[in-house]
Length: 477
Ligand code: 5CA
Image 1 (cartoon, rainbow, N blue to C red):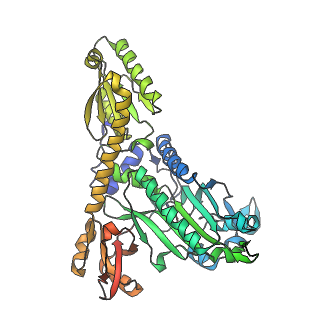
Image 2: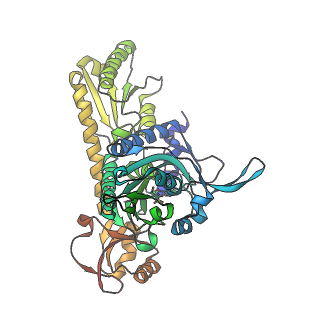
Image 3: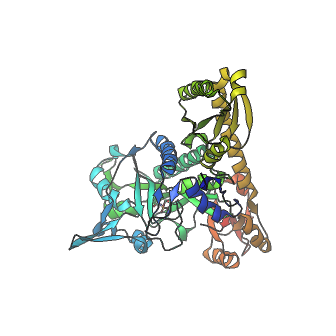
C-alpha cells in the first residue's frame, strides 16, 4: 500500500500531473521500449472499452462496422498526389519478408483511404449501391517527429475509429459531413467534454480533402487538443481510385466521399478535463466501476454488515450497473483513496449505524454526500449518477467558456493566449495568419462554427482591418 499513500502532483502543474495520473490510476504504462508506443493497463482498457462502446452505438445507427488489412501496397498508397505529400514523412514501411526484399513495399496504414478505396471501386456499380457508410476501429501507425505523448501523440494509434462514406453528389456528402459533426458533438456530450468546432484553414486541411472540420477542446494548460476531424473529400480519391457509379440516367459518375476520425485522444481529453488532485473523475457511463460499496466494519458485526452490503450490491447490480464491494482488510480511507484515483463516480459506505437505521451514505466523486434509505437505493443511485454527470459537465463547460476570450486589439492577444484560446476577426488570408503566428507563437485553428462562442455578425481582420469572419487562435498540442 506504500505507493498508494503518495499523492499526485497538483493539477496546476498539468504536464507532471498528466504523466503521473496515467500510471497511478493504471491507465497506461509508458515503459514499453519503443518511442510513441504505450501499453493499456486493464483499468485503462476498461475505460477505452466503455468509451468506444458509446462511439460504436452512435455509429451503428446508420453505419456498418468493417475491418480492412493493416498493410497497404506502395502501388496503391502512392496514387493520390496530395495524400502522398501529406503522409510521406509519416509512413512506416515493411520492406522485407524474412530475408527477402519485398517486390512491392508495404505501408503500415497511417489511415485507410488507400486500403479501402480500391475495394470501394470494386463494390460500387450503381446509384443503388449508395450511400455507403462504413467504419472500423483499428491501430494505425504514424512516424510522428513532434514530441510523442501517451494518448495524445502516438506512433501506434491503437484506437483509431475511421469512417469512410460514399455518396452520389457533393451536396449529399456535405450533409454527411454535418451529420458526422453532430454525431461527434453527441459523443463528446456523453463524455461531458465540451468542444469547439471550426473549419481548418486551406493549408491545414487533410491531405486530399476539399475541406476539413475539426473538433477541438481546451486542455487545463490552455492548449487546444484536436479530438476529431471530419473531411469532405469531394471526388479527389474517387477519380484516383476509379470509384464510379451509373446514375439514374445511365451515365457514369465519380462518387463523392467523406471520412472522419477519432482516436484515443478522446480519452486523453476525458482524463485531463475532469481529473483532479485526487485522480480520475469519470462520467458514469465510462467508469469501469460505477458504484463502489465500502463496508465499514468496526467491532464484531462483520457478517451482518457484509450481508447488508451484499444485498445492496444485488440491488444496484439489478439496475445494470457495474458495482464492486471492496472488502479488503485495510483502512476505509485507503480504499477511498484507491478508488477515487481510479475515478469511481459513486461510493456507498455502509457501517454499523447505517445497518441499524437501514441507511446508506452515498458519496459522489466530487464530494457531494447524500444519506439514502435502504428502500430507495435503486432509484436514488441512478439519479445520483445522472446528477453527478450534470455537475461535471457544467463545470467543464464553465471552464471552457472562461478560457475563451474575444479580442479585437492585437496588443491584448499575447496575455489572453496564456490562459486559453482567443477569437479574433480574420480575413482568411495566409499572410495575416502568418503575421498572427509570428507575433504570438499560436496558430490560427480556423473559422469558428459555434456562433454562441464567437458571437454573430460581421467583424474585421485583426491584422489588416478588412472584412473577415471569427477565427479561433490557440496554442495547439
Ligand atoms: N482519414 C482521416 C479521417 S479518419 C484522418 O486520418 N484524419 S486525421 O489525420 O485528422 O486523424 C483523425 C484524428 O486522429 C485527428 O483529428 C486526431 O484527433 C487523431 N490523431 C491524429 N494523429 C494522431 C496521433 N499521432 N496520435 C493520436 N491521435 C492522433
